[in-house]
Length: 314
Image (cartoon, rainbow, N blue to C red; front, side, top):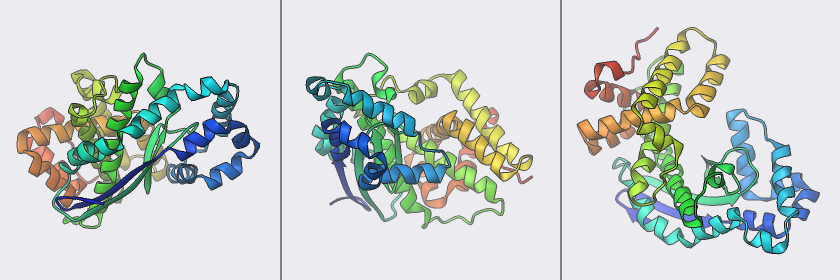
């Protein structure tokens, strides 16, 4: 347990589930259902699927584990997913010293407790998520489809962990918000998502000075004015459509375009960067203490006219 300003943190890494998958993939395949019930990251993964209303891809999980089972013991031991995770595990102390300090610099002076397990597994649908704790899919093609060294992959994962752990700080501040939510509940849910994912993306974008991640697609888009313009327009279009489509259709649109299409991540991160550069870090962090509506209002006051976020009631 360490203290950084008003943040109390206890962050610990655990690769036990991934190690089991490589040590005994045959045993995992014999009873997949029991494995998912017994292993902590698999239980959180099931909860994540239920929360976002996306089905578990059981075939994908079995394919990944079966691929491990077909390897020789030597090839299993040298598998990039296992080697990368072990390199990440070696840097747990560095993450707590440097990564945690970086993410805490993007939180307001409210009391917050980051009690987080970082759990490594494989064969799941999401390459990473934060739900109660943080789960990383070390076997995801995201980490291994490009020609990177083990150290470069480990740095990329550590960079993403800054993003995922920061989410816990954002969540801790929800109950302390100073603003009164608007009557437009659909708007507030969307703004919360944009605020949360946008700032988290900006936090790990700026964490590249600690943990480089030059091939991260979100960062490439954030550095490309054309991509920023496209994602920003998509984000505003989603906000506008809350007046014209039903709740289920809006939820699907937000998932497909805002999350999978990265509009909330890139649009929100651009807003965070503008607010940080033009109003200052304290102003940016204070939006977390106030709430997502204030984030948009404060951003609009310093934004260029063509990059404002219309939040007029419909």
